[in-house]
Length: 314
Image (cartoon, rainbow, N blue to C red):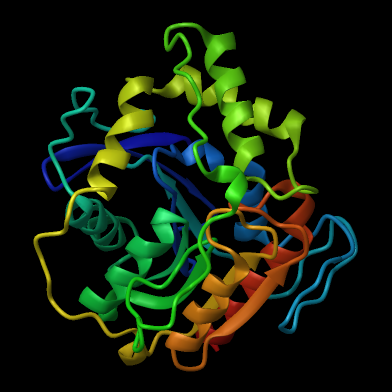
């Protein structure tokens, strides 16, 4: 359908929709500093249409099966929505180092998009920071969430926080990539390649695909330096709302997807998240890192999400 700017909460957010708006909606919430480009357009099309690309492979703790290439899975269409967070892509940008919003505003942006584009009710898929926002969204606005899919993320609340979760991998300690020349396309693309390689699993980094995504990120972004820095300021600022959160109250059917080589949130985080939410299912991606599912995983991830959302339509 092409990109459109929509106005929510006094800001402009750039969105793109795939599939028929009359079909059940899936809202994709990206990670920190990530424009919608990281939700690959082909991934979105497959999620909307159910058209398969080949045989499923991988370690999956859940019921997932593949379809022959080019065939549809018989699970109906989806209306898939991807969007640029504030300070990413073509959405409203703020001065570098001075984001005029907090995590609550990012959450309410997602809520407003569900109201405006999905008729007030959507399946919600979030990755990394987006997975945290999705958890908070279902706690604050449970009526909006038909189902949850949480990817490469960690529980925002735990019944027993005294039990520690494993820290990030040692190889991430002290990693600080130098700023590129934000005005130079090649410099920025190389920066994103280096960044993605750090967080990807050892067998899941796709250089060619990352390069294909990084170029449009440069081309589409209003202020790349603000994109790279402002969300991290938001994430390290205490949330003034200290209302208690209990994932044990979540009734939305939940699928947790986690790579077993995630260096940011080791797979125990995904297991802990699934344990916190009643009835949640855990799907483990063999060799997957801390990343939006790369093309090599789509034959696992797309059917899993479509089956998960179909069950909740039935």
